[in-house]
Image 1 (cartoon, rainbow, N blue to C red):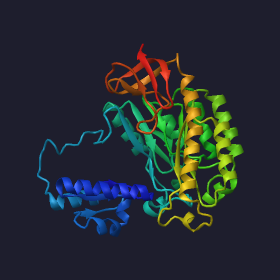
Image 2 (image 1 turned 90 degrees about the vertical axis):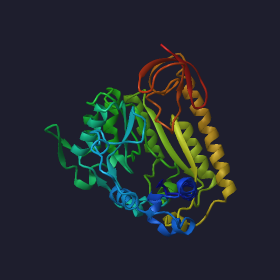
Image 3 (image 1 turned 180 degrees about the vertical axis):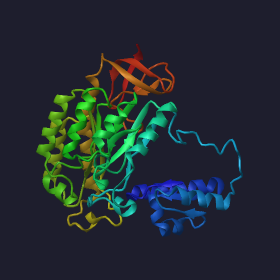
Length: 384
């Protein structure tokens, strides 16, 4: 059972899921972020077989084999070159690093996963190539901080297919762009060099999609969060990105009700939303996470006020999203089919963004869909 321990709601969900698994078969090995808090799990579910931390496949398999000895099977023991993944056959997540060097005050990921450790670029590209050979049509690049890729190894030069490639996000994107599939960037911290990948999007090398967690717009709140603190510069960069790549889809996440946030600072955030006109947005009411530095900040916002601000935020963004999607009516979009009648455009990541709905199609197909109508989240159309 993989778990998340980032926020209290995720801890509760993980604890409940462990209980459900125990009820079904009574034999559960727990792994993931919550595994670093073994006592939290044992207090509620003392009968779990073993508990490991994140990114520890060897410990998980050791625990499994301790309770279920592995018989030798010359057929099932043969792992395919593309590996074994849990996503549908046509898309896959490509993890390029582990850990994070930032110390955002609302986050405890560095204490769970440590500082940034970048995977060798040759290893990443070999995995990507194997996935594509195995039928994957979309690669979703993930990490805790995608744009920091290679910082820890000083952008060391690696090799892929005998050619030198620097361990750097821009060079990785150029290499992935040669594989002939959709490449989507997630969790991109807004470093200046992020600007370098926008032309690659305009040229069709990677998807015109950027997931950048801005978190807030108030300079004071951003400083308290230990995040980049200039909404004006962010707006300038957004305008520049759209000038280079007009079709770019911008996704972001924000936190409302952060300790000390005033109504005026929340209004600044709403104003930023109006000016930025982001395509896809998620919003979380601040949740105190055990071990987070932000818990010590004064001015805790009452729960009722946090939820009211989250509601108002999503109402504002809902109107923006509706207008954005309605502008696509009448256009023909390339859509990757997830299942018959449901797919995603280049501006939609699986599970977190909207969908395109139509009749027909098979999973994994790339089809052209004429858009007939839209609502706040999804598009509706027909096969061309």
